[in-house]
Length: 81
Image 1 (cartoon, rainbow, N blue to C red):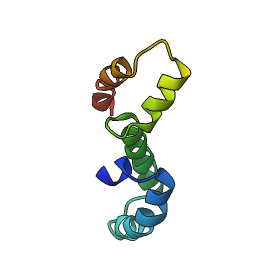
Image 2 (tube, rainbow, N blue to C red):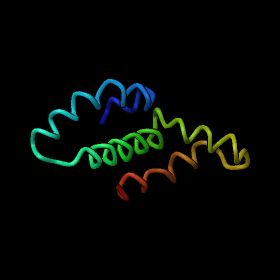
Image 3 (cartoon, rainbow, N blue to C red):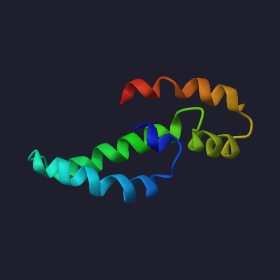
Image 4 (tube, helix red, strand yellow):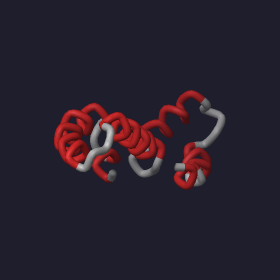
């Protein structure tokens, strides 16, 4: 979801969930899976550059590791999901 890379997760849940929930239920899927998929996508957006807010938090927690190395090391996490 490209929307989660520029909006906070709470805003995405409040805007997108009601719309997607009715669509998901009309196809017969469980809404719990919608929540699980949205959480995965939001976390992926928070660790992917250029808007990887969690990467900046990680850089402040471990100041001895440069931000560039943290961003380069985060690229394999895209393929885990």
